[in-house]
Length: 329
Image (cartoon, rainbow, N blue to C red; front, top):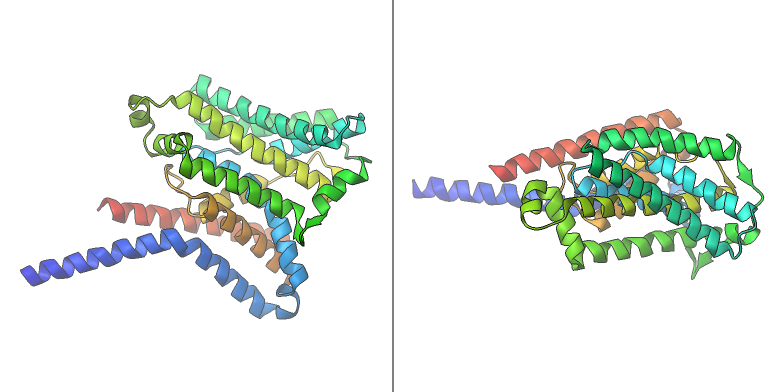
């Protein structure tokens, strides 16, 4: 009987260790696997230094909006409006520059501020209606997209200063500016989640909102902060996208909420709240960028990429639920 108990304990330890290993290194393992697959499929194109730089640059937008959605998911919520916020913030930035706002930095800050403002609207609606963020952000996604079409008259806006484009098309020490920006934001949010009381409270809120409330955590305040962070990240992504395209498009960011959610979920963020890491979301964004880039090189049509994204989201959530269930046992 003692031997059987010892064997059961060993088996349990192995199960826990495998779950821990998957939580810590699973996302990185997926990234390496994608690189190997596409590297073997098209080594002459995929593994070039120019293409690797392109993957990092393209992934910067995925990383920015993914980190915003990460916070919404961290409190067991969701933000489906990030694509529309991206478009609206980019359009406002372009309109400010066309209107002659100087310096350019003021127009950039204006776009980011608008992103945060739309995020605050999401947070306020969630707090004061009591509806789930899925319903609220599904509605505001349509509202913000409609507002973008209204202020732009459904037309692209271009002709803003060349210096604005150069800021986000240039490099610093050989590193593309959008990549530096995404890493800087990731560093700030990593510090917030790991070194501050606010970060600990957000994790507690995601783990159990009722317990967090009885522990003295202001649930509405932290919910508002989470959605403002998501809006600011989407606003930043909108500014970067506008600069990279050289124009503000009213339909920019359409479907990007899928990429944002995929970046967070594939990055190991629990869809049930209270678990996740900023670094893993960054890797998740790189995985999305790598898949899109690799499939484009292999000349796979865009709609197949959406199939892959959907499959990865389902697989990631299923694995999260599987390991969560094993932990409870």
